[in-house]
Image 1: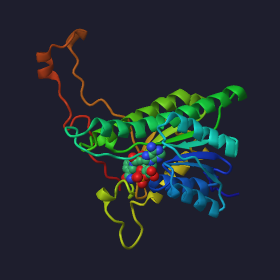
Image 2 (image 1 turned 90 degrees about the vertical axis):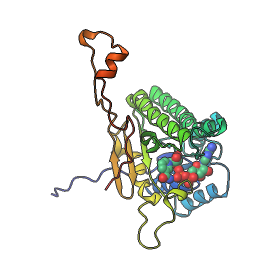
Image 3 (image 1 turned 30 degrees about the vertical axis):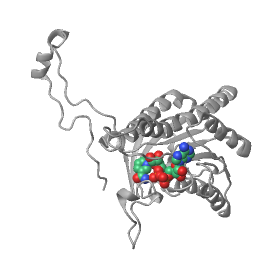
Image 4 (image 1 turned 120 degrees about the vertical axis):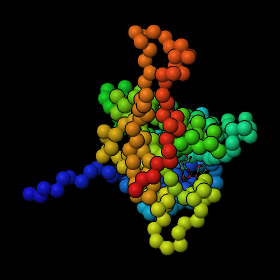
Length: 298
Ligand SMILES: NC(=O)c1ccc[n+]([C@@H]2O[C@H](COP(=O)([O-])OP(=O)(O)OC[C@H]3O[C@@H](n4cnc5c(N)ncnc54)[C@H](O)[C@@H]3O)[C@@H](O)[C@H]2O)c1
């Protein structure tokens, strides 16, 4: 008899997965990683050859993939993605919310359109797909009288906790996605759905201006391939006990975050209300406020 523990069940054979923003960057890497574990893919992005090429790449590798293009923040696209999964594969097991874009500008210069469009594509784009997926899973749970297999992996960003002064729209949207993740985890965890969020770093079209070109030699620590294994793990049966978590991930490091903690309390004597002047003398606040310094892993 061997003392080796049984291998964790990270296979996804036959499971149906939606990945949004799958034409390039992190979404493409995540779709390929899910397919490599045996998942059948519904790929979403804005219409274009790049999306079709990812589907072809999955099929060339022996996998299954269909394309459902469209604006991910559109209600009909969200509904259509779930329907496409049911039509092609008879089920939906995994939803990876990833699509989005940036329109960076300081708050004093930001236009209404720049704010609305970024909050819409990220935050509403996560809500719409999640809404249709969990409605489907709730229906299955009711008709079968028990828990379902459901996984949602949302894409937040460290921008939600570091302040990101040049990204008021993006930071706010990612903060919203983190809160949406927790709300969803609590709302549908009891029917078996596991909802978690990742804060990745990767060299993609979105970040080449920040991270620059890949190193000429050796592995790229900011390759999207360093992020996709976490997504495949969270999508798998092995992550059954992981719900309502937020992870940072890049370059071979995966960090599980803890929620904000109370740093200082000023309590008025005998439960009385503070006066402003009393608070001015008694309240101590942490240096830097609520903002987390840019964390360095490893
Ligand atoms: N790259 C990083 O370092 C990093 C860091 C933190 C968070 N993120 C997040 O990761 C996700 C993926 O980013 P990426 O770096 O791969 O960027 P990317 O630009 O390479 O890919 C984003 C994809 O989303 C698609 N998309 C944009 N709007 C869409 C819409 N309305 N409907 C459907 N698809 C749409 C784009 O066409 C593109 O293919 C984003 O949510 C991003 O905010 C990335």
